[in-house]
Amino acid sequence: MGNREFKCKAIRKALVLLMTAVMLTTILGCTPKKATLASANLDFDNNPTSNILFAPEGDAVLPAKTEQRALISFAGDTCLSSMQGSSAFNSVYDAEGAEYFLSGVKDIFANDDYTVVNLEAPFTTATARADKGPAEDDKGNPIAFWFKAPLEYVEILKLGSVEACNLANNHILDYGNAGRQETEKTLADAEIDFFIWNTTLVKEVNGIKIGFFGFSFDSDAANIKQIIDQLKAEGAETIVAYFHDGIEGTYQPSSSQKNAAYAAIDNGAAAVIMSHPHVIQGTEEYNGAFIAWSLGNFCYGGHNNPNDKDSMIVQLEFVRSAEGITCTPKLIPCSITSTSGTNDYRPQLLEGTEAQRWQDKVDAM
Picture 1 (cartoon, rainbow, N blue to C red):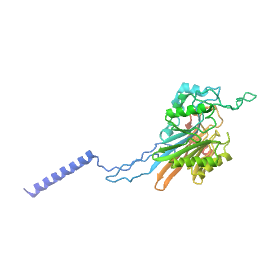
Picture 2: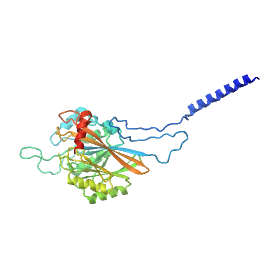
Picture 3: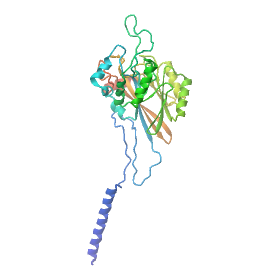
Picture 4: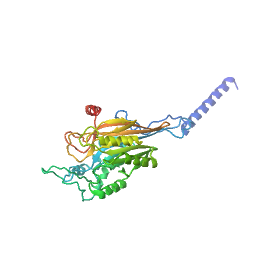
């Protein structure tokens, strides 16, 4: 056999081996993969990523623990009811259905890891109202308010991707303990978490155990410390307080708000969220922790046309690394309505000049 023929056969053999190796690589899926990032895919100002997924590169072995992230959204006063004697909210529900109310913000809530609102109207069939004194003054103007929602309205929360409710507020007992207990059962049946006063919540979100608790006007440093110690004993690695406090219609936090927030942080809370004034208030960093003084109204059936319709969603991104767990806040400007000049009970995100107006307002607080 001549050298030329031998060389040709050798080349053909090498080519066959090379093609076989390529085919095996393709079939067995051995192509090295880069780490992939799964984000919340929101267009709002570089929204923080809520999950990180890693795929091994070649034969590399992943470390025992990778970075863990949990993105939690908080919204303000959610009253799925009109006041006594009015059926305005119910009429919209009958016309539009449950999914309508949170459809303007569902992309935010569906793409986070956990969503918490302040539920300010009990789900109840009870009829006996709590004694609040006269409902009207001498001129017929309402001076006391009672709210309640039909049990099926819990679907508004479920379809809107709300996973938890703070119940510690001044309306949860509008129909007594019977109304509160029926609310808790309705939420539990819908697989929606809740926390209220001494009933705390520890929720594991993407591997991070987050403790939640709520008070309404009845907090002091002693019981705040007791609750935080209780949450730590239950395994909470980081803690958020949701307080219902303040003076309605005011744009600055009251002394009561400050006392509660500072006590929570001094005793180990990573963040404090507040509602009740029915308008938004500013934010503060205190001893390295975040405070949102008031988120304002959100999906709010208690007023058909409030003068101030600004609202906000606060997102807290918790990240566990070798150094510990960090908490990074983000503010998302909202309106309680998607229709100018009235409250259509459908909160929506603010954009463009309206978002800038909102930001300037918060910056000035």
